[in-house]
Length: 507
Image (cartoon, rainbow, N blue to C red; front, side, top):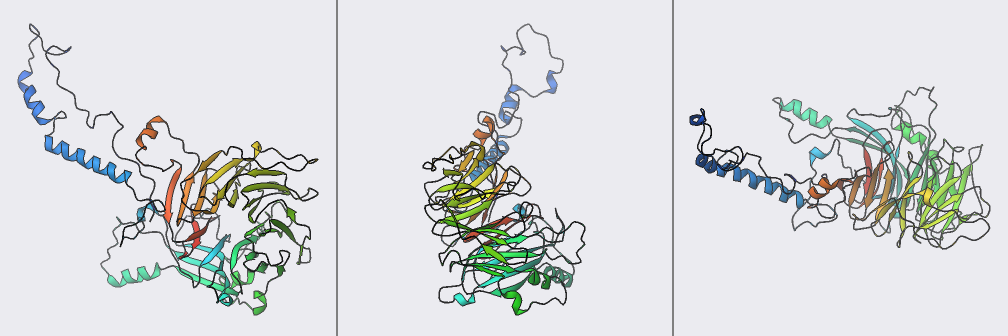
Protein backbone atom coordinates (compact mmCIF):
# COMPACT_ATOMS: atom_id res chain seq x y z
CA UNK A 1 0.00 0.00 0.00
CA UNK A 2 2.84 2.35 0.67
CA UNK A 3 6.59 2.17 0.56
CA UNK A 4 9.41 4.58 1.03
CA UNK A 5 10.70 6.32 -2.07
CA UNK A 6 13.00 4.03 -3.98
CA UNK A 7 16.73 4.13 -3.39
CA UNK A 8 18.40 2.68 -6.49
CA UNK A 9 20.77 -0.12 -5.73
CA UNK A 10 24.26 -0.26 -7.14
CA UNK A 11 27.27 2.02 -7.35
CA UNK A 12 27.51 5.54 -8.68
CA UNK A 13 27.98 6.10 -12.38
CA UNK A 14 31.54 5.56 -13.54
CA UNK A 15 32.47 3.29 -10.62
CA UNK A 16 33.36 -0.31 -11.60
CA UNK A 17 31.04 -3.00 -10.27
CA UNK A 18 34.00 -4.86 -8.87
CA UNK A 19 37.33 -3.49 -7.76
CA UNK A 20 39.74 -6.32 -8.66
CA UNK A 21 43.32 -5.35 -9.58
CA UNK A 22 44.17 -5.35 -13.27
CA UNK A 23 47.24 -7.45 -14.25
CA UNK A 24 50.16 -5.20 -15.18
CA UNK A 25 51.94 -5.35 -18.52
CA UNK A 26 55.64 -6.02 -18.65
CA UNK A 27 56.48 -2.46 -19.68
CA UNK A 28 54.46 -0.79 -16.90
CA UNK A 29 56.07 0.43 -13.69
CA UNK A 30 56.23 -2.44 -11.29
CA UNK A 31 56.01 -5.06 -14.05
CA UNK A 32 58.69 -7.57 -15.12
CA UNK A 33 61.40 -6.15 -17.43
CA UNK A 34 64.33 -7.72 -19.21
CA UNK A 35 67.25 -8.06 -16.90
CA UNK A 36 65.02 -7.65 -13.82
CA UNK A 37 65.23 -9.56 -10.61
CA UNK A 38 64.03 -13.14 -10.60
CA UNK A 39 60.85 -13.74 -8.61
CA UNK A 40 61.54 -16.57 -6.23
CA UNK A 41 57.78 -17.08 -5.67
CA UNK A 42 56.88 -17.22 -9.36
CA UNK A 43 55.78 -20.86 -9.30
CA UNK A 44 53.19 -20.17 -6.55
CA UNK A 45 51.05 -17.83 -8.75
CA UNK A 46 48.82 -18.48 -11.73
CA UNK A 47 49.88 -17.22 -15.09
CA UNK A 48 48.56 -13.96 -16.49
CA UNK A 49 46.48 -15.85 -19.06
CA UNK A 50 44.80 -17.89 -16.34
CA UNK A 51 43.81 -14.75 -14.38
CA UNK A 52 42.24 -13.15 -17.45
CA UNK A 53 40.19 -16.27 -18.17
CA UNK A 54 38.79 -16.19 -14.64
CA UNK A 55 37.65 -12.56 -14.93
CA UNK A 56 39.10 -9.34 -13.66
CA UNK A 57 38.07 -10.07 -10.07
CA UNK A 58 39.34 -13.62 -10.03
CA UNK A 59 35.87 -15.21 -10.30
CA UNK A 60 34.38 -17.18 -13.18
CA UNK A 61 32.71 -15.00 -15.80
CA UNK A 62 29.28 -16.63 -15.43
CA UNK A 63 29.18 -15.98 -11.65
CA UNK A 64 30.20 -12.34 -12.05
CA UNK A 65 27.76 -11.72 -14.92
CA UNK A 66 24.88 -13.24 -12.94
CA UNK A 67 25.51 -10.87 -10.04
CA UNK A 68 25.73 -7.87 -12.37
CA UNK A 69 22.40 -8.84 -13.99
CA UNK A 70 20.79 -9.14 -10.55
CA UNK A 71 21.98 -5.65 -9.64
CA UNK A 72 20.64 -4.24 -12.91
CA UNK A 73 17.25 -5.84 -12.24
CA UNK A 74 17.18 -4.31 -8.76
CA UNK A 75 17.84 -0.87 -10.22
CA UNK A 76 15.06 -1.36 -12.79
CA UNK A 77 12.59 -2.29 -10.02
CA UNK A 78 13.52 0.81 -7.99
CA UNK A 79 13.08 3.13 -10.96
CA UNK A 80 9.70 1.57 -11.76
CA UNK A 81 8.35 1.65 -8.18
CA UNK A 82 4.54 1.94 -8.19
CA UNK A 83 3.55 5.25 -6.62
CA UNK A 84 -0.12 5.53 -5.58
CA UNK A 85 -1.73 8.61 -7.03
CA UNK A 86 0.86 8.82 -9.85
CA UNK A 87 0.57 5.42 -11.50
CA UNK A 88 -2.53 3.45 -12.47
CA UNK A 89 -3.28 -0.15 -11.66
CA UNK A 90 -3.85 -2.57 -14.49
CA UNK A 91 -7.14 -4.43 -14.76
CA UNK A 92 -7.49 -6.90 -11.91
CA UNK A 93 -4.60 -5.46 -9.89
CA UNK A 94 -4.97 -4.34 -6.29
CA UNK A 95 -2.63 -2.71 -3.80
CA UNK A 96 -1.63 -4.46 -0.60
CA UNK A 97 0.39 -2.98 2.27
CA UNK A 98 4.04 -3.78 2.78
CA UNK A 99 4.00 -4.85 6.43
CA UNK A 100 7.68 -4.05 6.84
CA UNK A 101 6.86 -0.35 6.27
CA UNK A 102 4.43 -0.04 9.18
CA UNK A 103 4.85 -0.27 12.92
CA UNK A 104 1.06 -0.42 13.23
CA UNK A 105 -1.68 -0.53 10.58
CA UNK A 106 -5.42 -0.98 11.07
CA UNK A 107 -8.46 -0.17 8.94
CA UNK A 108 -11.99 0.17 10.30
CA UNK A 109 -15.23 0.81 8.47
CA UNK A 110 -18.19 2.97 9.49
CA UNK A 111 -21.83 2.95 8.45
CA UNK A 112 -21.35 6.23 6.60
CA UNK A 113 -18.14 7.92 5.45
CA UNK A 114 -16.76 10.73 7.60
CA UNK A 115 -15.39 13.89 6.01
CA UNK A 116 -13.60 15.00 9.17
CA UNK A 117 -12.25 13.71 12.48
CA UNK A 118 -10.15 14.92 15.37
CA UNK A 119 -7.85 12.94 17.67
CA UNK A 120 -8.16 13.45 21.44
CA UNK A 121 -5.63 13.56 24.24
CA UNK A 122 -6.23 11.09 27.11
CA UNK A 123 -4.84 10.11 30.50
CA UNK A 124 -2.80 7.15 29.25
CA UNK A 125 0.43 9.14 29.14
CA UNK A 126 2.67 10.87 26.61
CA UNK A 127 5.28 9.32 24.28
CA UNK A 128 3.58 5.93 24.35
CA UNK A 129 5.40 3.17 22.47
CA UNK A 130 3.77 0.08 23.97
CA UNK A 131 1.25 -2.21 22.26
CA UNK A 132 -1.61 -2.86 21.98
CA UNK A 133 -2.41 0.84 21.61
CA UNK A 134 -5.56 2.73 22.62
CA UNK A 135 -6.79 6.03 21.24
CA UNK A 136 -9.84 8.27 21.28
CA UNK A 137 -11.32 10.35 18.46
CA UNK A 138 -14.45 12.18 17.32
CA UNK A 139 -15.87 12.26 13.79
CA UNK A 140 -18.91 13.46 11.86
CA UNK A 141 -20.68 11.45 9.16
CA UNK A 142 -21.81 12.14 5.61
CA UNK A 143 -24.96 10.13 5.02
CA UNK A 144 -26.33 9.69 1.51
CA UNK A 145 -28.68 12.25 0.01
CA UNK A 146 -32.21 11.65 1.20
CA UNK A 147 -30.97 9.96 4.37
CA UNK A 148 -29.62 13.02 6.19
CA UNK A 149 -31.52 12.04 9.32
CA UNK A 150 -29.08 9.13 9.74
CA UNK A 151 -26.11 11.42 10.28
CA UNK A 152 -24.36 11.31 13.63
CA UNK A 153 -21.45 12.60 15.63
CA UNK A 154 -19.30 9.64 16.60
CA UNK A 155 -17.35 9.53 19.87
CA UNK A 156 -14.90 6.65 19.49
CA UNK A 157 -12.54 4.53 21.53
CA UNK A 158 -10.22 2.31 19.50
CA UNK A 159 -8.39 -0.26 21.59
CA UNK A 160 -6.37 -3.44 21.22
CA UNK A 161 -4.54 -1.93 18.27
CA UNK A 162 -1.75 -4.45 17.89
CA UNK A 163 1.65 -4.02 16.37
CA UNK A 164 1.92 -5.07 12.72
CA UNK A 165 3.25 -8.58 12.19
CA UNK A 166 6.28 -8.70 9.92
CA UNK A 167 6.25 -10.99 6.92
CA UNK A 168 9.58 -12.46 8.01
CA UNK A 169 8.46 -13.23 11.56
CA UNK A 170 7.84 -16.86 12.43
CA UNK A 171 4.20 -17.05 13.50
CA UNK A 172 3.92 -20.82 13.54
CA UNK A 173 2.51 -22.30 16.71
CA UNK A 174 2.44 -25.98 17.57
CA UNK A 175 -0.77 -25.48 19.52
CA UNK A 176 -3.56 -24.51 17.09
CA UNK A 177 -5.90 -23.54 19.93
CA UNK A 178 -3.36 -21.17 21.43
CA UNK A 179 -2.75 -19.66 17.98
CA UNK A 180 -6.48 -19.08 17.47
CA UNK A 181 -6.78 -17.44 20.86
CA UNK A 182 -3.86 -15.15 20.05
CA UNK A 183 -5.41 -14.18 16.71
CA UNK A 184 -8.72 -13.40 18.38
CA UNK A 185 -6.99 -11.31 21.06
CA UNK A 186 -5.18 -9.34 18.33
CA UNK A 187 -8.44 -8.12 16.76
CA UNK A 188 -8.88 -4.35 17.23
CA UNK A 189 -11.92 -3.13 19.13
CA UNK A 190 -13.98 -0.09 18.12
CA UNK A 191 -16.45 1.25 20.68
CA UNK A 192 -18.64 4.23 19.82
CA UNK A 193 -21.20 6.54 21.32
CA UNK A 194 -23.47 8.29 18.86
CA UNK A 195 -25.03 11.74 18.95
CA UNK A 196 -27.84 11.97 16.37
CA UNK A 197 -27.58 14.78 13.81
CA UNK A 198 -29.77 15.75 10.88
CA UNK A 199 -27.07 17.15 8.62
CA UNK A 200 -23.60 16.33 7.30
CA UNK A 201 -20.57 17.45 9.31
CA UNK A 202 -18.15 19.25 7.00
CA UNK A 203 -15.49 19.64 9.68
CA UNK A 204 -15.18 18.81 13.36
CA UNK A 205 -12.66 20.06 15.89
CA UNK A 206 -12.25 19.20 19.57
CA UNK A 207 -11.35 21.53 22.43
CA UNK A 208 -9.76 20.09 25.56
CA UNK A 209 -8.58 21.95 28.64
CA UNK A 210 -5.33 20.32 29.80
CA UNK A 211 -5.91 18.61 33.15
CA UNK A 212 -4.25 19.90 36.27
CA UNK A 213 -0.90 18.13 36.61
CA UNK A 214 -1.59 17.56 40.30
CA UNK A 215 -4.83 15.73 39.63
CA UNK A 216 -4.88 11.95 39.35
CA UNK A 217 -7.48 10.40 37.08
CA UNK A 218 -8.64 6.86 37.75
CA UNK A 219 -9.76 6.58 34.12
CA UNK A 220 -7.90 6.58 30.82
CA UNK A 221 -10.68 8.76 29.37
CA UNK A 222 -9.76 12.14 27.88
CA UNK A 223 -10.18 15.29 29.97
CA UNK A 224 -13.32 17.48 29.61
CA UNK A 225 -13.91 17.80 25.88
CA UNK A 226 -16.03 20.08 23.70
CA UNK A 227 -16.58 19.57 19.97
CA UNK A 228 -17.56 22.11 17.32
CA UNK A 229 -19.15 20.76 14.13
CA UNK A 230 -19.41 22.93 11.01
CA UNK A 231 -22.42 21.53 9.19
CA UNK A 232 -23.70 21.47 5.66
CA UNK A 233 -26.84 23.25 6.92
CA UNK A 234 -24.78 26.35 7.74
CA UNK A 235 -24.92 26.10 11.52
CA UNK A 236 -22.21 25.27 14.04
CA UNK A 237 -23.06 22.76 16.78
CA UNK A 238 -21.11 22.76 20.05
CA UNK A 239 -21.39 19.60 22.17
CA UNK A 240 -19.92 18.51 25.48
CA UNK A 241 -18.83 14.91 24.79
CA UNK A 242 -17.22 14.37 28.20
CA UNK A 243 -20.05 12.05 29.39
CA UNK A 244 -19.74 9.98 26.21
CA UNK A 245 -16.00 9.56 26.70
CA UNK A 246 -16.46 8.54 30.33
CA UNK A 247 -19.04 5.94 29.35
CA UNK A 248 -16.42 4.32 27.10
CA UNK A 249 -13.90 3.99 29.92
CA UNK A 250 -15.62 4.02 33.30
CA UNK A 251 -17.72 0.94 34.16
CA UNK A 252 -21.28 1.89 34.93
CA UNK A 253 -21.06 5.39 33.44
CA UNK A 254 -24.04 6.17 31.22
CA UNK A 255 -25.16 8.79 28.73
CA UNK A 256 -28.61 10.36 29.02
CA UNK A 257 -30.58 11.87 26.10
CA UNK A 258 -29.89 15.32 27.57
CA UNK A 259 -26.15 14.78 26.97
CA UNK A 260 -26.82 14.54 23.22
CA UNK A 261 -28.22 18.05 22.99
CA UNK A 262 -25.82 20.76 21.84
CA UNK A 263 -24.65 23.30 24.39
CA UNK A 264 -24.93 25.96 21.68
CA UNK A 265 -25.99 26.32 18.05
CA UNK A 266 -24.16 29.16 16.27
CA UNK A 267 -26.52 30.64 13.66
CA UNK A 268 -24.50 33.73 12.72
CA UNK A 269 -23.73 32.26 9.29
CA UNK A 270 -27.46 32.40 8.45
CA UNK A 271 -27.63 29.05 6.75
CA UNK A 272 -24.55 29.58 4.55
CA UNK A 273 -22.44 26.43 4.38
CA UNK A 274 -18.88 26.55 5.68
CA UNK A 275 -15.80 24.43 6.35
CA UNK A 276 -13.46 26.57 8.43
CA UNK A 277 -13.31 26.43 12.21
CA UNK A 278 -10.66 26.32 14.93
CA UNK A 279 -10.60 26.47 18.73
CA UNK A 280 -8.07 28.84 20.25
CA UNK A 281 -5.23 27.20 22.23
CA UNK A 282 -6.42 27.09 25.87
CA UNK A 283 -2.89 27.86 27.04
CA UNK A 284 -3.18 31.35 25.50
CA UNK A 285 -6.88 32.11 25.90
CA UNK A 286 -9.75 31.73 28.27
CA UNK A 287 -11.13 28.24 27.50
CA UNK A 288 -13.74 28.12 24.78
CA UNK A 289 -12.85 30.69 22.11
CA UNK A 290 -13.96 29.55 18.65
CA UNK A 291 -13.67 30.99 15.13
CA UNK A 292 -15.86 29.83 12.21
CA UNK A 293 -15.88 30.84 8.54
CA UNK A 294 -18.47 30.51 5.77
CA UNK A 295 -19.03 30.66 2.01
CA UNK A 296 -19.57 34.42 2.05
CA UNK A 297 -15.99 35.04 3.15
CA UNK A 298 -17.01 36.01 6.70
CA UNK A 299 -15.46 34.82 9.97
CA UNK A 300 -17.33 34.95 13.29
CA UNK A 301 -15.98 34.61 16.80
CA UNK A 302 -17.79 32.72 19.55
CA UNK A 303 -16.66 32.81 23.19
CA UNK A 304 -17.67 30.80 26.24
CA UNK A 305 -18.98 32.91 29.10
CA UNK A 306 -18.05 32.41 32.78
CA UNK A 307 -21.48 30.85 33.32
CA UNK A 308 -20.83 28.13 30.75
CA UNK A 309 -22.88 29.60 27.91
CA UNK A 310 -21.65 30.95 24.57
CA UNK A 311 -21.92 34.34 22.89
CA UNK A 312 -21.20 35.09 19.21
CA UNK A 313 -19.93 38.46 18.02
CA UNK A 314 -22.29 40.24 15.67
CA UNK A 315 -19.48 41.90 13.66
CA UNK A 316 -17.54 39.43 11.51
CA UNK A 317 -13.95 39.52 10.29
CA UNK A 318 -14.27 40.45 6.62
CA UNK A 319 -11.59 40.40 3.93
CA UNK A 320 -11.84 37.25 1.83
CA UNK A 321 -13.50 37.63 -1.56
CA UNK A 322 -14.79 34.05 -1.59
CA UNK A 323 -15.44 31.15 0.78
CA UNK A 324 -13.26 30.83 3.87
CA UNK A 325 -11.91 27.28 3.69
CA UNK A 326 -9.59 27.15 6.71
CA UNK A 327 -8.78 28.95 9.98
CA UNK A 328 -5.73 28.43 12.21
CA UNK A 329 -5.04 30.21 15.49
CA UNK A 330 -1.43 31.20 16.12
CA UNK A 331 0.25 28.78 18.55
CA UNK A 332 2.02 31.59 20.44
CA UNK A 333 0.17 34.88 19.81
CA UNK A 334 -3.09 35.13 21.73
CA UNK A 335 -4.84 37.53 19.37
CA UNK A 336 -3.50 36.33 15.99
CA UNK A 337 -5.02 33.84 13.55
CA UNK A 338 -4.66 32.96 9.86
CA UNK A 339 -7.29 32.07 7.28
CA UNK A 340 -7.22 30.57 3.80
CA UNK A 341 -9.88 31.01 1.16
CA UNK A 342 -11.24 30.05 -2.22
CA UNK A 343 -9.90 33.40 -3.46
CA UNK A 344 -6.41 31.87 -3.31
CA UNK A 345 -5.25 34.07 -0.45
CA UNK A 346 -3.88 33.51 3.02
CA UNK A 347 -4.69 36.32 5.43
CA UNK A 348 -3.34 36.96 8.92
CA UNK A 349 -5.53 38.82 11.43
CA UNK A 350 -5.15 40.54 14.76
CA UNK A 351 -8.41 40.01 16.63
CA UNK A 352 -7.84 43.22 18.64
CA UNK A 353 -7.69 45.48 15.58
CA UNK A 354 -10.57 47.86 14.90
CA UNK A 355 -12.46 47.33 11.69
CA UNK A 356 -11.75 43.58 11.75
CA UNK A 357 -9.65 43.71 8.57
CA UNK A 358 -6.63 41.47 7.86
CA UNK A 359 -3.18 42.71 8.86
CA UNK A 360 -1.47 40.62 6.14
CA UNK A 361 -2.80 39.41 2.80
CA UNK A 362 -0.82 37.15 0.47
CA UNK A 363 -1.85 35.38 -2.70
CA UNK A 364 -0.67 31.84 -2.03
CA UNK A 365 -2.20 30.12 -5.06
CA UNK A 366 -4.06 30.65 -8.31
CA UNK A 367 -6.57 28.13 -6.96
CA UNK A 368 -8.38 27.65 -3.66
CA UNK A 369 -6.39 27.49 -0.43
CA UNK A 370 -8.07 24.49 1.19
CA UNK A 371 -6.06 23.90 4.37
CA UNK A 372 -3.48 25.56 6.62
CA UNK A 373 -1.18 24.33 9.37
CA UNK A 374 0.78 26.54 11.73
CA UNK A 375 3.97 24.98 13.07
CA UNK A 376 3.76 24.58 16.86
CA UNK A 377 7.54 24.49 17.22
CA UNK A 378 8.78 27.04 14.66
CA UNK A 379 5.94 29.52 14.91
CA UNK A 380 6.94 31.77 12.00
CA UNK A 381 6.28 28.88 9.58
CA UNK A 382 2.82 28.41 8.07
CA UNK A 383 1.97 25.69 5.52
CA UNK A 384 -0.85 25.91 2.99
CA UNK A 385 -2.46 23.25 0.76
CA UNK A 386 -4.15 24.18 -2.51
CA UNK A 387 -6.79 22.91 -4.90
CA UNK A 388 -4.28 22.25 -7.70
CA UNK A 389 -2.34 19.70 -5.64
CA UNK A 390 0.46 22.06 -4.60
CA UNK A 391 1.39 22.70 -0.99
CA UNK A 392 3.82 25.31 0.26
CA UNK A 393 5.60 26.52 3.38
CA UNK A 394 5.78 30.25 4.16
CA UNK A 395 8.03 32.29 6.44
CA UNK A 396 5.70 34.88 7.96
CA UNK A 397 8.65 37.12 8.74
CA UNK A 398 8.90 37.82 5.00
CA UNK A 399 5.32 39.06 4.74
CA UNK A 400 4.88 42.83 4.90
CA UNK A 401 1.97 44.24 6.91
CA UNK A 402 -0.58 46.57 5.39
CA UNK A 403 -0.70 50.22 6.39
CA UNK A 404 -3.36 50.93 8.98
CA UNK A 405 -4.07 54.29 7.33
CA UNK A 406 -4.76 52.87 3.88
CA UNK A 407 -6.69 49.89 2.52
CA UNK A 408 -4.54 46.83 1.90
CA UNK A 409 -3.08 46.57 -1.62
CA UNK A 410 -4.03 43.68 -3.91
CA UNK A 411 -2.38 40.53 -2.55
CA UNK A 412 0.90 39.52 -4.17
CA UNK A 413 2.66 36.16 -4.05
CA UNK A 414 5.98 36.16 -2.21
CA UNK A 415 8.38 33.26 -2.59
CA UNK A 416 7.58 30.32 -0.31
CA UNK A 417 10.32 28.66 1.72
CA UNK A 418 9.41 25.42 -0.05
CA UNK A 419 6.69 24.20 -2.41
CA UNK A 420 5.81 20.77 -3.80
CA UNK A 421 3.63 19.56 -6.68
CA UNK A 422 3.88 15.82 -6.11
CA UNK A 423 0.14 15.24 -5.60
CA UNK A 424 -2.07 15.21 -8.69
CA UNK A 425 -5.31 16.28 -6.97
CA UNK A 426 -6.50 18.78 -4.38
CA UNK A 427 -4.82 18.88 -0.97
CA UNK A 428 -7.45 17.98 1.64
CA UNK A 429 -5.37 17.87 4.85
CA UNK A 430 -2.08 19.27 6.09
CA UNK A 431 -0.48 19.08 9.53
CA UNK A 432 2.94 19.67 11.07
CA UNK A 433 4.29 16.96 13.34
CA UNK A 434 3.69 18.01 16.99
CA UNK A 435 7.24 17.10 18.07
CA UNK A 436 9.38 17.56 14.94
CA UNK A 437 9.34 20.89 13.12
CA UNK A 438 10.58 19.39 9.84
CA UNK A 439 7.96 16.63 9.39
CA UNK A 440 4.64 17.35 7.63
CA UNK A 441 1.61 15.16 6.91
CA UNK A 442 -0.30 15.77 3.67
CA UNK A 443 -3.50 14.13 2.36
CA UNK A 444 -4.89 14.62 -1.15
CA UNK A 445 -7.74 13.77 -3.47
CA UNK A 446 -5.53 11.23 -5.27
CA UNK A 447 -6.24 8.83 -2.36
CA UNK A 448 -2.77 9.19 -0.85
CA UNK A 449 -1.52 10.35 2.51
CA UNK A 450 2.14 11.33 2.42
CA UNK A 451 4.79 12.17 5.02
CA UNK A 452 7.55 14.70 4.26
CA UNK A 453 10.84 15.65 5.88
CA UNK A 454 11.72 19.23 4.97
CA UNK A 455 15.17 18.88 6.53
CA UNK A 456 16.34 16.56 3.73
CA UNK A 457 18.87 18.07 1.34
CA UNK A 458 20.72 16.08 -1.30
CA UNK A 459 24.36 16.54 -2.12
CA UNK A 460 25.64 16.09 -5.68
CA UNK A 461 26.32 12.36 -5.34
CA UNK A 462 22.88 11.64 -3.88
CA UNK A 463 21.21 13.72 -6.59
CA UNK A 464 22.92 11.62 -9.25
CA UNK A 465 21.95 8.36 -7.54
CA UNK A 466 18.25 9.30 -7.29
CA UNK A 467 17.95 10.77 -10.77
CA UNK A 468 16.31 7.58 -12.04
CA UNK A 469 13.34 7.95 -9.69
CA UNK A 470 11.36 10.46 -11.68
CA UNK A 471 9.18 13.20 -10.16
CA UNK A 472 9.79 12.09 -6.57
CA UNK A 473 11.10 14.90 -4.35
CA UNK A 474 13.87 13.78 -1.97
CA UNK A 475 11.85 15.21 0.95
CA UNK A 476 9.11 12.60 0.42
CA UNK A 477 9.41 10.00 3.18
CA UNK A 478 6.34 7.82 2.84
CA UNK A 479 3.28 7.23 0.64
CA UNK A 480 0.20 5.57 2.10
CA UNK A 481 -2.75 4.63 -0.11
CA UNK A 482 -6.22 5.11 1.39
CA UNK A 483 -9.26 5.23 -0.85
CA UNK A 484 -10.96 8.63 -0.71
CA UNK A 485 -8.83 9.94 2.17
CA UNK A 486 -10.11 13.32 3.40
CA UNK A 487 -8.28 14.15 6.61
CA UNK A 488 -5.43 12.92 8.77
CA UNK A 489 -3.97 13.93 12.13
CA UNK A 490 -0.92 13.03 14.19
CA UNK A 491 -1.70 11.48 17.54
CA UNK A 492 -0.33 13.94 20.14
CA UNK A 493 0.75 11.18 22.55
CA UNK A 494 1.74 8.23 20.34
CA UNK A 495 4.90 9.20 18.41
CA UNK A 496 4.59 8.58 14.68
CA UNK A 497 0.94 7.47 14.79
CA UNK A 498 -1.47 9.01 12.27
CA UNK A 499 -5.27 8.65 12.29
CA UNK A 500 -7.10 9.29 9.02
CA UNK A 501 -10.62 9.22 7.64
CA UNK A 502 -12.00 8.85 4.14
CA UNK A 503 -14.53 7.19 1.93
CA UNK A 504 -13.32 3.74 2.93
CA UNK A 505 -13.56 4.37 6.69
CA UNK A 506 -10.82 5.01 9.25
CA UNK A 507 -7.12 4.12 9.11
